[in-house]
Length: 163
Length: 163
DNA sequence: AAGATAAGTTGCGAATCGCTACTTACTTGC
DNA sequence: GCAAGTAAGTAGCGATTCGCAACTTATCTT
Image (tube, rainbow over all chains, first blue to last red; front, top):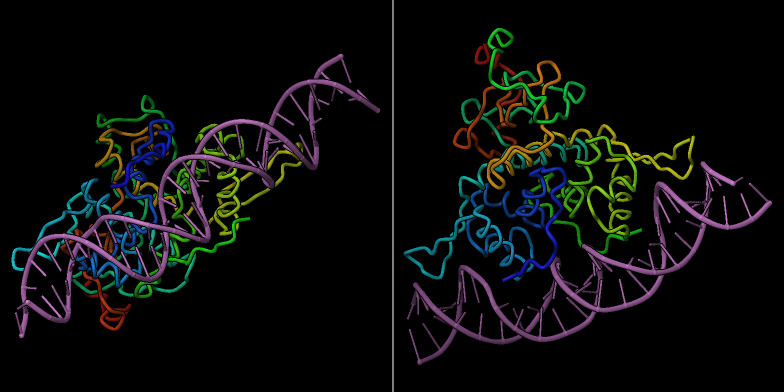
């Protein structure tokens, strides 16, 4: 029951990054999420796999459930067992997690991680997470502009440009 | 000069996610990074924009510099001024940051953030960050498998499949 | 009923956060 | 040159959180 007395991260310029960090920005949150993606669903599984302290784990799981990232269900056949499963909202964090992991592989460890995430169709590793334009072109940092809403082109009269 | 007395996050199954979080997993790190992407480069700019305590900011900036994510340079024309700029390694976190921000927009705030990141070519907003196969196909969670290295197809004899 | 197991909770010392005030090094205006 | 201002960072201190270990509660198993 962690009352949130700490001031929420400031909404600098209406960015939703602070909101995302409010839910996922604490230590262990992303690792718990990664474990959940890897078919771990129970308290003791998380605990032994991550080596996290039990009270911290309990706190994080509660928070993730509160934020709708995990779902908490008591198993019918053994009511001691609680199952934590990713919600759609939690599953939607996959690209973020992969991007962070790929960055770590490239710039920190230098080695490919185990297990590897592969395309089920051909069992080849997935490609790098990249920023792309609306039409799928890969964009580099130089091709990106931070723009105010009024300067953004909306969905009108760009059919020619896209074609 | 924060000595890291806290045990590093366990390397669960050789994943590089803990390594990435070691560098970026602390409170404020991603917000400082976002500010750096938005052309903020000085201590006072970060401080007033984020409302972060000065000692914490100093600590985070040092850590980000230590990890090679930011570069620290004293300005020649005013040697009081220190410029913090993204390194290539830091800039490589853009997809991660965008993915996290997009997730926040979709699942937390529900609104498009300001400023918007647009394609410089047509000023249209960028597309969503997605997991893709080696050939660019968008992959859903169901099409992904966590696989051991020995079960991964490498770059041989898949020219037919790709074509 | 006795023992094992799953999921927490509690207590407590250590580390970190956040606020405010202070310091240090430079630059500017007179 | 000297007072005032500015940029970056440090110090002190109370409040919060982390992390370890032991304990509790509810539920199976035998």
